[in-house]
Image 1 (tube, one colour):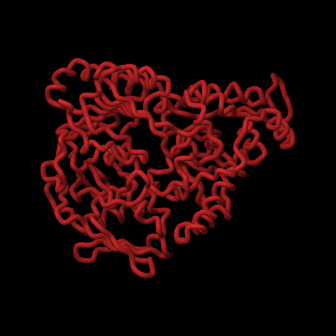
Image 2 (cartoon, rainbow, N blue to C red):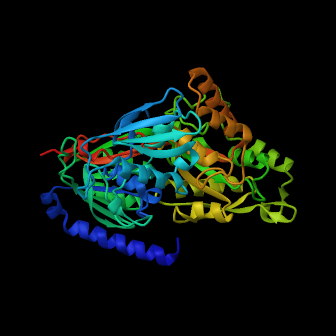
Image 3 (cartoon, rainbow, N blue to C red):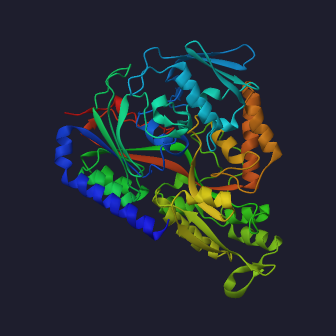
Length: 512
């Protein structure tokens, strides 16, 4: 992030926080539920920031998912598939309406999904969808082959359905959804205001008004929870959890979720094209030390990419990732790296000097990066740490300038992890996944999972995927994820969605 952009955003955030502080009593009297999270609104297009609007229940997807990832009705009240499993019929809720008052029609849903299907960065691009059609009041989706994960793909925020009035040509100009809350004011990159939608065809929410504020600094979010400037604070820094638990006015929920902190590796570049070097990098990271000292949870040290919360994908018998700097040095020597001036490794006249990009939206990441910087120095690897805007990671993937990136990857934003895996490990890799690396056997296993229904065959394919990723390390797992939420006891009915699809505001109420 440039210093100019940082100054502008900091000044804007400060002005919003000052406004929040000076009007806290008035907002309380108006019964506004204030939500604070680290994620900025980077645009109105569903592919860019759709998750903001689906989590706030402003926009809906065709299907949803329960806590275990099983499909649930959303805009589609029901669905069926043909005997050959190549055609799916979705029956819409009959009384659903968009926030502009117009009915949710099959034509509007199909056009939104057709747009999502062709959108770069959306999940439907990686699906075998052949056609999206309208049949009377129903939506028909045809596939080129059986694809059992289609309902999971349709729960992803990039497929959220907006009213025709939301578009100007193909560009989203305003957010007009169909959820229990309607957007009143959207101020990218930091703020959304929403109000209860009185024509919602479900049970009327008891919370009438909601504001969302993006606050990147974890300590600021913690202070807002403590001072009562926000009723719901999402993504707590690990070091703040115990402190907030001692506050009698706050309830803290911490839930292990299907997210893993990983290092994205440029496997096509001069440093990490050799798998031995990627393995050495992994062996040089003290995961247990990081998890214990920085994340306050020794059990968060990742032994493989899929955490135990993904029970079907986690492979208990897989040889765990370990910390072994001696073995790491030996692998680097095998790959031709020798000690050079100042102890930094050299090969073919090139010093092993790299840059790791990370971002402070997840406050533990810069601290983790600094710890890894010191650990890798002991191997002869000079790693600089750059704290950037999160968008600079996919940008570095696209222009080839990225060496490493520390990030947190969610395997359940598509409730079936295959959705994320196809995005990350397809033939061309992915902005948040593989870079300069592809594996035909892994792609075939992912492709097979799309159509296989036999439980034993599916388990075998999932284990093969995990084994290949463990061996090749196109991304390097570091730590599994605990998701912390602080809720002021002024509100009731707060539950944490392990899939991070929704804040579940419509189920909340005021305590008094």
